Amino acid sequence: MRKPSHVTALAAVLMALGVALFAYKATNFGIPLKPEVEAPVWTVEARLSFRSSQGPVKASLKIPHESRGFGILDENFVSRGFGLTTAVNGDNREAMWAIRRSRGPQALYYRVSVFQDPARDVEASAPPFPAVPSLEEPYATALEQLVASARARSADIATFTAEMLRMLADDTPDENVHLFLDSGASSSKKAEVAKTLLAGARIPTRIAHGLELSDTVQAAGLSTWLEVHNGDRWLSFALDSGTQFQPTRRLVWYYGSGKLMSVQGGRGAETIFSVQRSTIGGLEVAERRAAQQDSHVFEFSLFDLPIRTQAVYSVLLMIPVGALVMVLMRNVVGVPTFGTFTPILIALAFRETRLLYGIVLFSLVIALGLAVRFYLEKLRLLLAPRLASVLTVVVLMLAIISVLSHRLELETGLSVALFPMVILTMVIERMSIVWDERGPGAAATEGLGTLAVAIVAYVVMSIDQLEHLVFVFPELLLVMLGVMLMLGRYTGYRLSELVRFKTLADRPK
Image 1: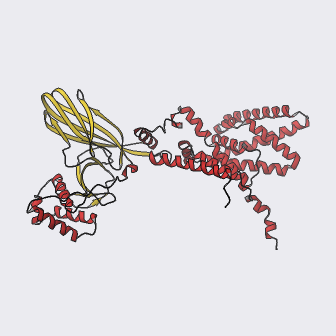
Image 2: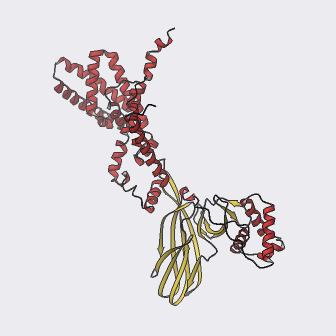
Image 3: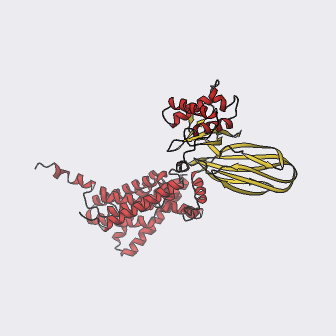
């Protein structure tokens, strides 16, 4: 078996490294693949208020912790005069305030900004099966009959749970349900009973409390629902109807049957929630996400450079894209050009002048420059003075065109000075040499080829999507480098040669 060449192996390594870095940044930090992408962000404020008597006060409030499907951008606490600590207890997180002396009405604030994060929707390991509850009679018999009835009218864990919740939500429950649940019971009580009954079937469950995130500013309250694990992932069910739903807009505040808050040394405690939706840039979300993960990706990226430097690199990073276009046009298509990088520099100039005006200005300067070059040839000047003279004439022509454009109120013509003057000078010199050696036809062919490649490079380099990807993921240049290395070993036919040798192909054998 033929071993891959060194160039092939090097190209494969570079391309694999570039793709791996791109996938890592896009997947782990959610860096947007499109420019000007905005991400919705919800700010939730919880206000814990109470009245305290003179003396020490301790208050606690459960707060979000690793909510499935959401990531935390920022959070802050406002608690004047109170000491603050946070602790994680199982699936929940709790904020605890304390003060030695307090009197009168008090208000403690917790504010959190969250965003939807599909990466956090990945399920953790399956929980253990619960033990069958040990109940006294007649509760044990009632549990067995309810489990048997739900199992007979279901096919899997999801339908079993839905059937059990439907029986609990029935307006006319049978005697078995009535043993566990009184009419008019709260959602928390229904969730506790459902958890007990589902444990009788060895189904893992958990009680979730959360907020519905809307697109308008509004006061909100916690709702309660039941989650069961089917062996692969957690499924969510409404307690009042047993309907399964996807909690895409529900932020889990805490799990379990415990209280949301507790206050020692105060009375009349209540918690009020407010929700507000806003939008921020997708890149800002990704940057904050990287900071939360203690990643230094953005610290060692182009975003850490000054703004003016970033603007320069946004242009420079597109030069390899134009170089790849040039390689494809010359080595694969077979378009002749004056020099290797001349079309790329002309394409960069087109980005300032725009395509139509750029073509007109390029053609005008080249035509006038050729006329001056042929006149200088009759003076029999040496090479260096002749090039310097052509360069001077080119600068003068650009200045004259700019002045005339300004007088005619054609502001596009003012950017003609951004044309690479030295490159135009060398194009004029090279075109005149080809004119003398191979005739005007060859000179016109290479001149038109240079212009055609510059136009294609300009069109590709002007794609906003591509410019965004290259700037945000500069490792994609490694992929382009690998492609260029592979094309460097290409020795097959060019597309233009198919037309060139078409007569031979059509000749009868």
